[in-house]
Amino acid sequence: MNSALSILYKDNMREIQEKYDAIVVGLGITGMSCVRYLSRNLLKLAVVDSRNEPPQFKTLRSEFPEIPVFLGEFDQNLFSSTEKLIVSPGVPLSNPVIQKVMEKGVEISGDIELFLEKAKAPVIAITGSNGKSTVAMLISEMISASGKKVLLGGNIGTPALSLLEFDVPDYYVLELSSFQLESTQHINAIVSSVLNISEDHMDRYKNFQEYLLAKKKIFMGDGIKVINLDDAVIKSMVNIDDNIIYFTQNEPDGGTFGIRIIDDVDWICFGNQKIISVSEIGIKGRHNILNSLASLALGHAIGLEFLHMAEALKQYKGLPHRCEFIANIDGVDWVNDSKGTNPGATCAAVEGLAKGENIVLIAGGDAKEADLSSLGLSLKGRVHTAILIGKDALKLEQVISDNCTVIHAISLEAAVKTAKKLSSSGDTVLLSPACSSLDMFTDYTERGEEFIRNVKQLEKNGGTEL
Image (cartoon, rainbow, N blue to C red; front, top):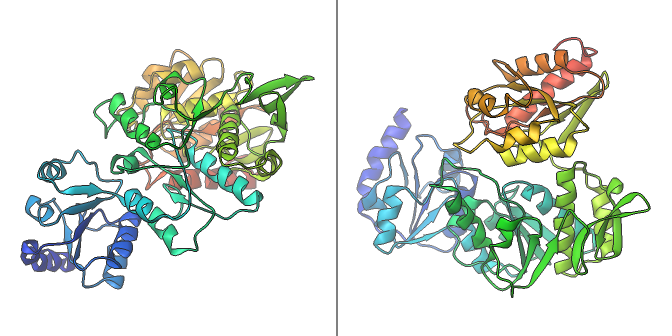
């Protein structure tokens, strides 16, 4: 701990006897947005973070030098000195100190709850284990293509509370994580969706059911629910008398979005009405067909015209680190899916991109205690070689070794070199780790950018070496 922080701790010890209107727990980007928002409404505010050097500490000190900051182990007496805790998504509500003050009646809230209290435009709320960023971006593009104003934020890009600093749009689109939903008690979105569910963040939740319950909170209220007709788990989250719009990867009934084969062409349809051919969609892969269907259902729920939505689907080319095409070198496609941080995401990427057994998969990292068994079946007949890196490479090997050749690499750079040697024309080298990046990188973005650098270097050198 440096001397400046030592003085901060010492000076703040006497502040614990004070009473605060609210305490912000966690000083990342979201926590900082909470401080800015609350500082305009409260007389006394404090900030707490368990880290010695939280990411937004210097920003806070620059903008609000008068606000006391408490770093290090959480203090129950401090948390009891307020009637409201504003908890950042990265801080689990299961923390023993938070649990104890909850039992004493301290109100627990988060940035999404604060945002919803003040939002003056309808909210479109989207969650899911995978694809939520893509769908949030797609529906935003569809709204813009329809000539309406939209602001996008939450778990993507701009923190939700920062959206309130702009002029009121026609719609807000919020991508919401299970962490954000935990601390949200009142949601009444005009339309909401849980896109899919697979095991993720099992290092935070006691079990899969607890994770499901967090996701289900998005369906509070009486708005329209957009549901994948093919997913029994998600269907069980809603009541049969709810206002529901369904989508399916199969042929749709009337009032449902799905896929029809018409004159040997795959069409996205609403009932019998053709909207756009699958080949015209700007983002590729079977999983992105489902994302497109979900986006169309969300847009239909708020009355957007199919013509405008179809044009947005044609123009949108996807987000970085999500099945992002990087290069074709000697007939081999190199694809960056670093955002594939759980088994469900990697299964979707592999199944969406495979053309026979043509994939060389680079995977591995911190599995976050997730059940990896679903990977085995997805890789079979699609992946001929898996190159594994990171903390849980051996766990991955145990579940996939019967279905493909497994090779270990000591780094991502070494994995790229090995993939170049083992791939041939017609193959796809896919980075889709099925794990978080935190054992080797700052985040999935840094992991993806290193992959891109390595691939670009290969391309620059004519595919011969990094």
